[in-house]
Length: 418
Ligand code: AMP
Image 1 (cartoon, helix red, strand yellow):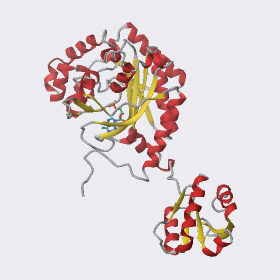
Image 2 (cartoon, helix red, strand yellow; image 1 turned 180 degrees about the vertical axis):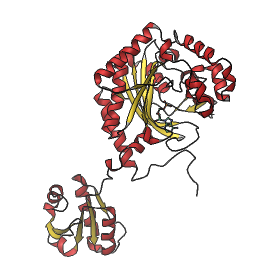
Image 3 (cartoon, helix red, strand yellow; image 1 turned 30 degrees about the vertical axis):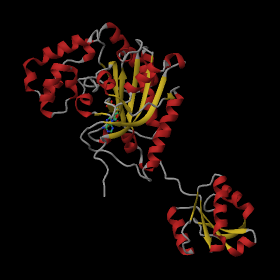
Image 4 (cartoon, protein in one colour; image 1 turned 90 degrees about the horizontal axis):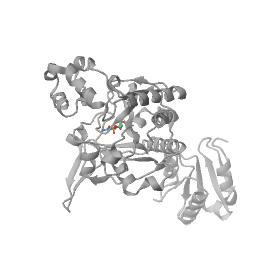
């Protein structure tokens, strides 16, 4: 027996319906807000992520599935969607093609992380991006949409947290203030933080090591170092959120693990999920399109983890669909006709199962019961000769002969148990 790869999961029947529900709801909500779907490849050039996601990120430093292919190209299984969507936006000049570039996508991502509940090596995201809008109204709309999606899924108890990490103009001042406040304490921080202090001091806020927390909690806040424009932007984002009636909390530690964020960052967190409690996260990335070779355009987006949405989905939210009918045939001489009966039902849009293995009457009935079929349509010699089949209502156990022509009508109009 060859088992699945560590950190990957099969989505089996019984679970897959919950996934389909989440995906369908995500599509519906995105389309309500004017987003159209984009599908980009799972495999991209490695440099797209080293340049886009950023050299100093955990993703690029230690989590990418990168390899040299048979044509000597360095390629990577995408660890996140944004750089690929930006690439496609530029490569296909979507700015000209679309009246308003609002794009969503759904699909698998790959990160070599330590697997645990809610964290996998192959996981799936809903990814949402807007290009070319610098105005704070879109920041707020995006967060409100994210909250609407969570609401539409019936998930309760999540909290929106926001922050502003400034822009290339004001961030250096904040980084310098961080280093100054840290002073000699840098040496008391964990090894990762000491490295972060050199490459990207903001990232220190991502640290989860308990011993480091007292030092980190005393560090300055990015919102106190925003330039006039970034400060105004952040104020306006909050104003819009308030007008939407969207509750939020400001978290000074929310810097997020990617290099490209500017100004707004946000997460929707769900305490009941445990350690991996972010349902979704995102932010503004105004320099990224240009950095990846495109025009100088603003950008903003978020990614939601589908595993976590499925996990947080209320237990009884989704029922696996049951077959409408199971066609049982009693006797070799009527077997072929049974397949025609099944086809007629399927043509009429009824979910229909049938026995293929010439099982006994009893065993076919058992199977129909196990499959949860609402009705069994029994095709037997005598009835067939009269142009009839037997219809058994599996809810009431009631059984009666019906004319073949009226079968469809009966099945489509009869509620179980009636
Ligand atoms: P990120 O792309 O890191 O900003 O993450 C966005 C969202 O994707 C998170 O809030 C999680 O819901 C989800 N996510 C990120 N990494 C993983 C992972 N390894 N396994 C499962 N979900 C993840």
